[in-house]
Length: 326
Image 1 (cartoon, rainbow, N blue to C red):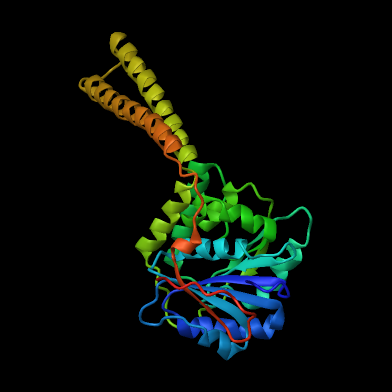
Image 2: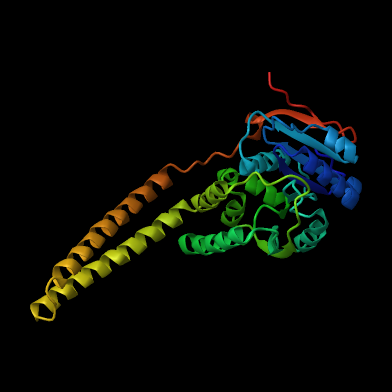
């Protein structure tokens, strides 16, 4: 079990990053001492598997959840939150953060300070400055605007957040959490507050996320609101189809009164008919897909025990039952 004497629980996914995570554990110990309990989720690392030695070296209490295979960053967080949700006490808070140093441990007190409000369930970190390339910043700005257009919601935060115990239990019951953590928070209807924070540099190594992976991560965020996206696409297609019909009628009227130049009428009408057919078909497809998505929505929450191979506990932690696959 997670000791009730630790008011703060840190959930962090780790994949092939033993050096950076070990440094994070030391900084968390220096910042919070015995008030913190770390749940590190080893996402199927092979070259640099994580064990309890990183926690022991930092002298911090915690547990390492070793997964049977690599499941990805977002599902690893969902598994960690699922584990915490079954052990957390009413007065404990959870902070989700990356293990590479870009989420600065020194910023956690600012998140927790805002979390004390009775009107807040989750405090998310909005990046005030980013240590990123110009290309990344440009595409991220485009993504945020596209996300707002197709979902009707604004997303300006990632995984770095502080959550109350009730919020952790609510999130862990959402199947969307394993798809995209930030979008699941938006979909959870929890009361969200935003805390502007700077992003720090990596402790060691380079990011394992390439451009394709980032694009996939972004599209997964939209998948959480698949019904809203499909409805908006259908509405946009229907509007274009109606405008195409109106344009076609206008072209016929202009031809009838003799205002069209030679060849103009056939070209314009042909283009408008093609637009109508394509957008009309797209509108019908989105309606059909909306029904499929609604009927096929997964209602069961993620069972973290299905993915955990072993739980390794630091020497300074209170006894925790180990789970080892047979």
